[in-house]
Figure: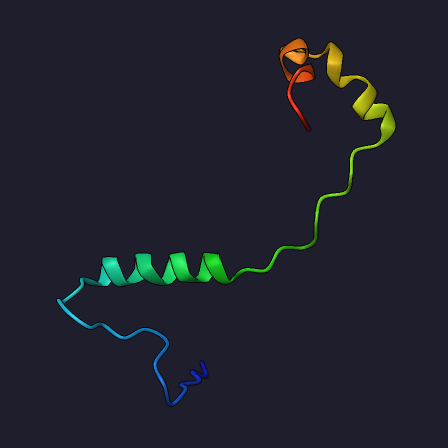
Length: 66
């Protein structure tokens, strides 16, 4: 296994002594935030939009601005 280390650490503990579990949780959150999205969701088709007023609660959404 090859480990690549940079000269500057990505995370620096300023105060306290975190446990291994706390560090693992932090790394997981940082890795999740660093993920890139595949792309924006495509706009719904006109056919799909035409059925929205008939859905449950459609009358409520019809009076709200889009």
